Structures are given as structure tokens and as C-alpha cells.
Length: 84
Image 1 (cartoon, one colour):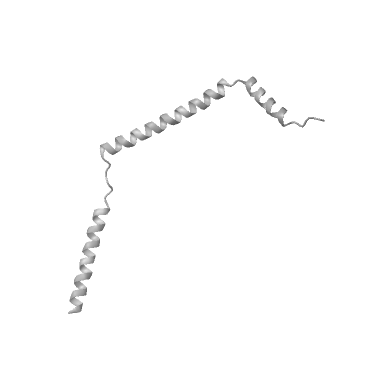
Image 2 (tube, one colour):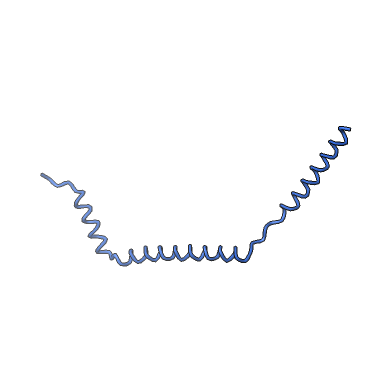
């Protein structure tokens, strides 16, 4: 009697495992609205990166070599030890 119950439970678990595996094996297709949302996020990220790169380039170009030398000279003078 117990053997029949155990065989029934084992077969139920086997069928349940097969059905569960069959349902989870298929990858989920992305919906159109999900693709659109991802594209919007990527575009916004790209624009943000371009804007920050553009600002960094403009700062480097606008500050000419003479301004850089003056800034370097002023910091080196303040660090130098003056004789007493």
C-alpha cells in the first residue's frame, strides 16, 4: 500500500518537474515598449557623455598655454621656500 503511494508521489514530482522545466526553458521576448524604453535610456546616457566630454574639451581649449604656465608658476612660487 505504501509502495503505491510512493510511486504516485514520485511520478507526480517527475511530471511536475518536466512541466516546470518546459515553461522556464523559453526566453522571454521583449515587448516593443520595453525596447523603446531601453533605447531612450541609452540615448540619454550617450547625450550626457557627449555633453561632459564636450565641456572637458572646451575647458582644455579655452585655457591657452600661457594661462596654464601662469597657473603652474603661481603654485610653484607659493611652495618655494624664501630665504630669510
